Length: 569
Image (cartoon, rainbow, N blue to C red; front, top):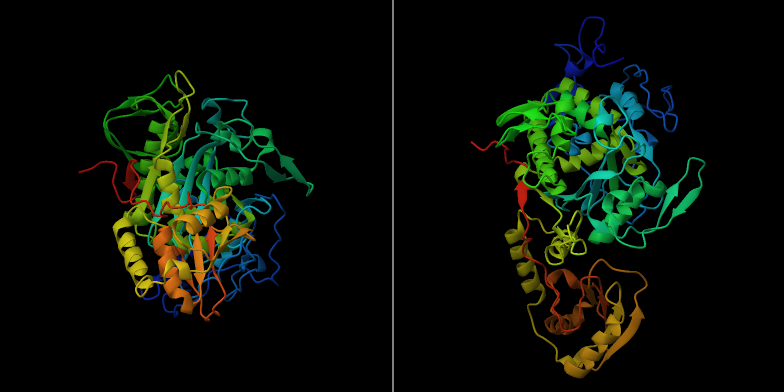
């Protein structure tokens, strides 16, 4: 049944029987006005039920199962084994706060309103793609979470052929957002990646419909980022690998939407408020946008036109358009939080519209897994969500630049901050905490340099870094008892010094010499004998022997916050 005919015989909408419990933050089922609220978990149908099994690739709607008491989670919603090793998942109840919008709103559609009798319907809406070993099988694990949201510019759908290339039947990575959620869930950074960024696309593999794997060669020369999807058969996993190459981060999941998603979702939330300093009239252009100065509410075709428009913007460039898209996303975030969170009916409508337009990896390919992710994302306060464009500069190889390249100074700073999980909204607090932690670890006596025993390994640093560091330690720092152990068994995320408790004085001295941050210090729990060396593993953050490993304090690039309104009063 559809959203207009889901009522019962007495005219009651099942969604309205779910009542918010202010003590728990969860919606609870109330069968009638006099009945006590039942604390019914919102999860999948019982594995043994007769609910229809979803056919791979099927996107049609299915009949909702009859209401049954407290169904157990389906097997597909239990955490799987991640493709990358993760810590065990946290336990405990978490309130799902639906705070985000636009492309991010495709998942954050309010956890508690997922009534069990809607589970099959929403499952049937979601389309999944097998991206092999890329990403994680777990919806959420301890540690930071990196989610890639891809806007596909395929022109299928009513009215979409007017937006550019009509022969584009597969689409490209036209609008791409990298969403980094901090480990402590207090903040997030959302980075827009320009489609015209020139980078090298790495080799990747794509799973075929017959189960085989096709190897797709990367680009031999820098090419536009948007070709990381859709060109030569590249799938979203290829786009994820490309972003990993650019940023040095490990991505967990992807979500992909198309033009139709913008139309349906903006309509489902009742429109999105936008604001223009000057009127825009692009009746002869590709967008057809016609809006006055000041505040307007857009939905459906107008919302898509707003996001696609360049006319009337500063330089009428893709970077200008990205800035408008970020403001639209922030506005929808507030719209959902203020007008939709407390209405189960609205939340179900948004969930239905969102999942119909959604393609995801198998790690989050069910309502239950999306709900798990939504609960974690919902903890973040709007003021601690930073939206920004990846720092870029005009391509110096083009006489009249039409593409961009990474800003060689600011982009590495941003990547370093994200790799080290430093918030752009809480940098001072993080720096203070890091300094206090480092002072704690370094408090105490220091050994003499001649008393340091250390094995040096290269776990992701520059080629020859272990030998160069060994030479520097022995010839200029007096650390004679040091040994080059070659490459580490596996690469590490960042440089680390592992030592026993009774080697703390040696570790403090070596940290002084190397300029190691607190995060690099990894004390053990058991003492070592007198001849056992410490282990120094050089990571990607290591630049050169004698150059301290320090964290950047800020990124010199325009930023905005999700709680900032477009029309400032």
